Length: 394
Image 1 (cartoon, rainbow, N blue to C red):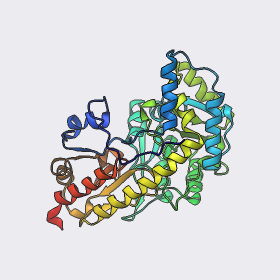
Image 2 (cartoon, rainbow, N blue to C red; image 1 turned 90 degrees about the horizontal axis):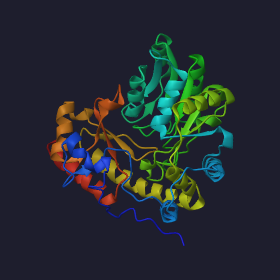
Image 3 (tube, one colour; image 1 turned 90 degrees about the vertical axis):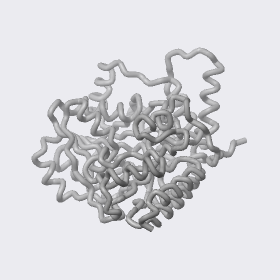
Image 4 (cartoon, rainbow, N blue to C red; image 1 turned 45 degrees about the vertical axis):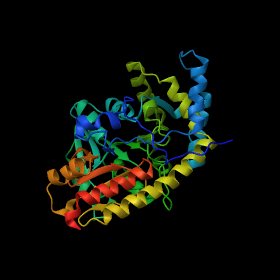
């Protein structure tokens, strides 16, 4: 019998070595005793029962040796991509990394040299820029066009930026974090053409591809024609199934030459995956895991409606409509306040820890990012606190 998830259950994550709750006071000055942790992108929900059962089986076995025979693991990935995304993946195309930040860093290390430029479409996930700069490469920022409610690519403007930048690679976030866009086929074709035009390796981070709301359809970049010879796909179970600590990601490369280069770099660095992460991923990519994700997205859809309605009711605030992810991107520009002032109100008055917009690059200056993958009672409490903190605007 399938155990129904209880997404409303409040699970106390304090004092469990949880970054999201145990580090928010030192970083944001928000106490976990009465604060709300809405920053780090992991969920406050238990993963599906099939994953927990897989971990229990290994724990009960009691011997934790090297992992071998990855056929079931590869079959699970191939089944998931075919059934959920209409994407046929060959087993030999799958390379497993220590999460997708590690995967991004390995891509930078494999196909660029110190001093080369790597293109990011900002505002975008902050870890990309961190690993690029840590590898002594240059971040080339191409700012997305924003009309006050929706983000879109601006290829004409970006051509001029990249032409003189000495870039060798671009990293696309699809669906996009933090603005929640699900790129259309036409937009993806535009990104592919942009990569070809500027002779860039295209790294497509699709870690949020299962977290898509009703009415939206994610299209894997691998299903776009004419890009396979320069395309690196990155996927993972970790965001989808609330197992971020497993640090398991897949770099899927259909082109044999690109795959050989990446595999050689992994070999040179002595990288191999964590067996528990592989057991969890195999269990996740199953019919039971799929049913859990469907229920999760129904619940998150309710959360985003509650959050958006409450935030948009505050004059001067705008919650960008989410098409995917559980990361709400809130614009404070209409308040006329300085970044220091609206951030102070959120952290000190509302007692909410949220990611600061500037960490996501150009275009993030007037924003904060809020994680709504938490029980609805906390989302409702966050809305009430925000409305109280900005009560003078109402």
